[in-house]
Image (tube, rainbow, N blue to C red; front, top):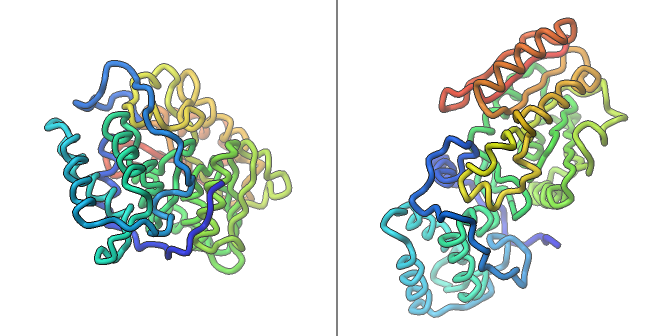
Length: 346
């Protein structure tokens, strides 16, 4: 069971850190394989932690002599191969999240032997650093994450600016479908006025648990309601009343999953990645439910796998539901890829 901590919410680190953290986490089959990629998946060597609380949220109660911590740092650095110098940067971040904010106190959030096992899992088993430390810096938040929940990507932050650009967004009701960690729901809720609300749904019980933790940590329980269920199913009583629908659904074609980088394909939940044969299964389902979910003038934005999917969806929505939607268009991400499809209900 995830638990809250008395530790205050941290200020987000610079955007550069978020981008660098995802250097090895591109969820596309065309990503170049890292020099660390073994020929076949390794059997994970990390035992389940005695404390399931995310590492960065645990209280720093484990004293450590400075010499022992330095010896650990040297051992950890020695595991980094010359082909992966970015892991030295990861080690600095790992130790920062595992330590008391005041380094003079020499306190850690876990025993050294547990930290050693966590670092081995990152270096040898390619477990994402975000799962190791239990968080991702995203959208001005420090979002708690864990195994079984998709790690928020930097490019997805663009949906927040799209929401902000909708006239009167502050007072509307919004849906975040497939909320995962709840990152989008929490970030949108923090932008809303006193009458705005977010309904966030996910079919994964793990995701619902983590999303509720993040809602609690940021104190937006009065604005965000997390509901367990698939897509629109838990939202029957608010259909036709929503100002906006946001979703970052599974969109990777099934055949591309084996080509994903190990940090993604071996560790992130298939439920949040697999979009069916052409990657469009869930996106098309979302399109089918839009017209009945949105109120007149309502806004939608979906994240996609890129140019091909976005262009298809724009044409599909504009043709099949021309009388229901307007201003349907693809939107570029910061890499100039058509990453999003957005539009308005007539």
